[in-house]
Amino acid sequence: MPAADAGGGDPPVTVRVCFVCTGNICRSPMAEIILRSLAGETPTPGGLLGERLEVSSAGTGPWHVGEPMDPRAARALTDAGYPDTGHQARQFQTAWLDHLDLVVCLDRRHVETLRGLVGTGADKLDLLRRFDRSAGGDLDVPDPYYGDPEDFRRCRRMIETACRGLADQLARRGGA
Image 1 (cartoon, helix red, strand yellow):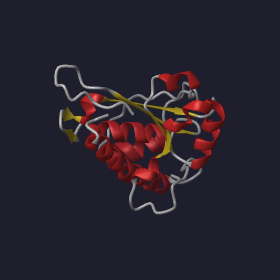
Image 2: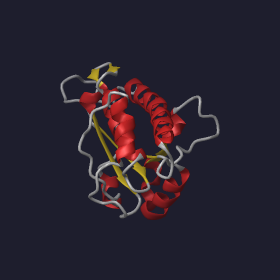
Image 3: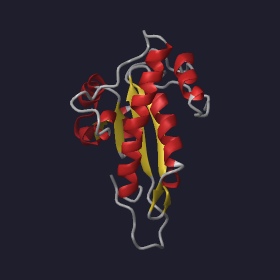
Image 4: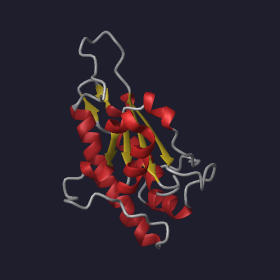
């Protein structure tokens, strides 16, 4: 990730993060909304993290392009007080890597899929739960798509915990 300018005269460096899951209707849009919300409350030496962060999400495949977030995922978010952003699913494009600082995958399959597509940009890939100190060796966020509302709430809680860790790490780096 690029370093923030310590000179004070230049505008703060913006960090661009994209979350990736399978279809971009459950896990990755939840992570996008949660990190954006947390960043608006997370201080850095130069202001709030949200002032220096661009967050997006995408899926590895085209199955749901243009569709809204799964209603169960949206409900898990709104029940916890997160805003409804009118999300529309999209597919990850390798050309985006030139403009992204970090691509955060929700499970190992997504990392493997993207590694096969991006080649030299693989150093920008990471797993969300690596930012969750309590995750241990279980780094995948399970896909709640075939589950019930409790599976979506459990997924949201996992994502919240990991996004807090990610926000804290980005804040320690000055937002960059």
